[in-house]
Image (cartoon, rainbow, N blue to C red; front, side, top):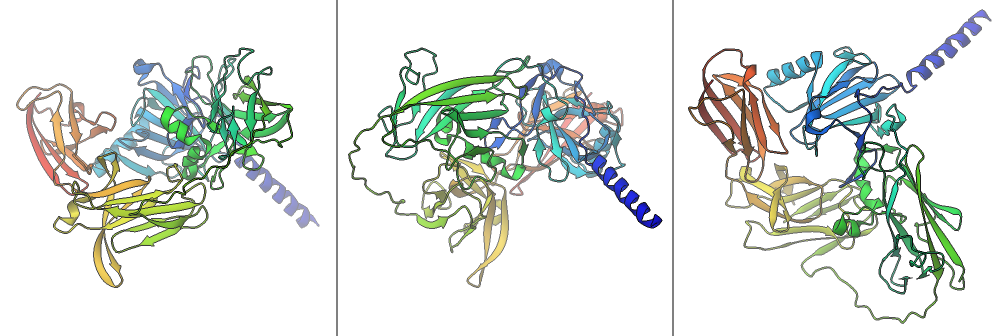
Length: 583
């Protein structure tokens, strides 16, 4: 009996310890500044949801603002990229929480030492490495880094994320210690009604209708002047939020739509899975967004949307029976995280009219293109002797046809390879693989697959592989692609280049050497810099294509310097440059 009670006590203590270990920690703000966001969680960005909150640091004067650990933990990952998030830092905390910091200007203390030692040991600037617990522990309030403008930042700020450590899903930092001073309601910038099909009429036309939000009593959509509708339609809403000290175009927390006082639609994002972040496109009135950049969230639900941040009825369309001529009220409510709200009401009334049947010529894909069924649920493979396509399941948001084929064009050394859905305007939700044979008469290592943007080729990371077709071995070019469209093969025979910005051969130099670095097509794959035979750290900024060398890192006080730079692009073209300088 005593053993039984001891076992029960042990199990209860174990459950309590596990519960405490998964209890989310209380996080402090990582900046000793008021929380003034220039971007908020799940905000609509091009092809992705914004995965954190952007905290303002005061523009260029704020570069170097100290960043502090919001709770005890340890550095779990360090990553530096010339693009993306620039200088990045990941800290694991108790309670299954990870905090992430992007666009840093630099690191502090033991973290800075670790980064520099890693770069010297591997003779690189950009890297990505994980660390185990105990290597770089941090305490709450410890200075860990400095905010900046590295990577593809649009301006100086701290991008701050809170993630689930196990799943790496991003969570809203406003639920984890970031408190905004916010008494300002959101703004509803636009409401659109969109037809479901060709039988829908909105204000007696088949086109989408832009609701007049002027507030005038006589405006179409007011209670005294309802919009005449016939058939089923979707609602699109464009809104934004702001708080004290923030910009005008921040994201909001929730969108609710009510029809005649009954809840019809709710949109809210409380977590983001990075593999599905492109599903932002499925939420938008995509064609209108492409032409205006105004992000209208649609009530329409697409079957292939893996995120489904909205709750609604059916496919998200509104409609009334033909005999219903009563006045109907559509209420749009935008709520921010602090509970401030903006409300707009739109009134519609069923308007019956006789639709004249119209003869429509059926559409068919272009004569030179083949078609295959492209579904939400199943993967697709196309294996031909002149090209191959491999697409995973979940490429599109609704079932469609994939059109594909080739056209000869004398402007290029290969045919133009076309791969695109027949009807869907959306970019692919997932990455797919394109494979084409090498072009005879050219060095295979110098060939690169490119996507045509208009007539301008944009290089894709290309692999040269061996692959047999019907038992015949051959060499192929292979690339992972994140777009539909037209593709060609091009030859890159030019080595990368360097253009000095603040120094000249044989002249005296200052503390920092700056130079432009680039490549004509495939991109710079590797670069290394040496001064008087000693490897030196050189930082490359992708935004400005600028390579910088700080001469304070030199271990010898030499006055005559020989700068030697080795460059290689993704097609193995290489170049060595030598400059003789003086301090």
